[in-house]
Amino acid sequence: MPSDIQAPLCQETLRIIDSFTTDFSTSELRSELQETGTVLDELSSQQAQAYVYYRIKRLIARGWIVKGPSSTKLKPRYEKTELFEPQSPIESTKAPVTEPNSSRVSMSSTLQERLNKYRGEMLILQGEAEECDHLYELYPEFKASLMADYQTTVDAKSVLLGRIRLLEKQLARLEVN
Image (cartoon, rainbow, N blue to C red):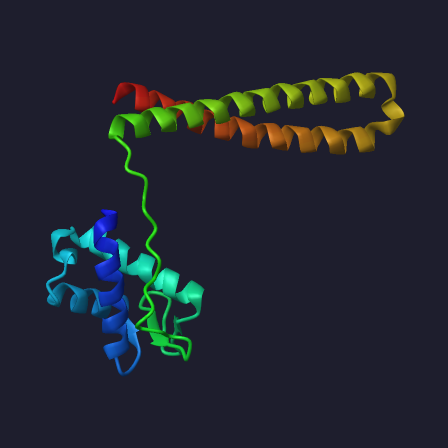
């Protein structure tokens, strides 16, 4: 969402929440915002919903609203607290404007760094497993403790292998698109 529309929307959001006399839902807040003719109308339904959830989350973090007692997991309702201050603007956070290609390059770079890190960790774990095997051959009487270490290493290798595979898939998708 462009940062130049956040300030009016923040104030409008606070004004609408202040106008609710009882608890409210995200859909009620979104409907009210859309009825006021704000730039929220220019957003897709999904973007408008994301905006409302983001603002709700920020207001909960400030302690200005809480989930009401009549909330359900699927249909939460919110209530204003005594800390609610409708005249106080919520500071806007300017999202960095990045070109899609630079975002893709940035993501690719980050994924590649993580992949290299995980591959390094995999080599370390491979060395650890091989050392467990070697120590077992030398000291079979310590089988129990060596097997526990070996199993921990094998489990960690499995997790890393899953991460490596996922990163490789994502990098391949980025290269194709």
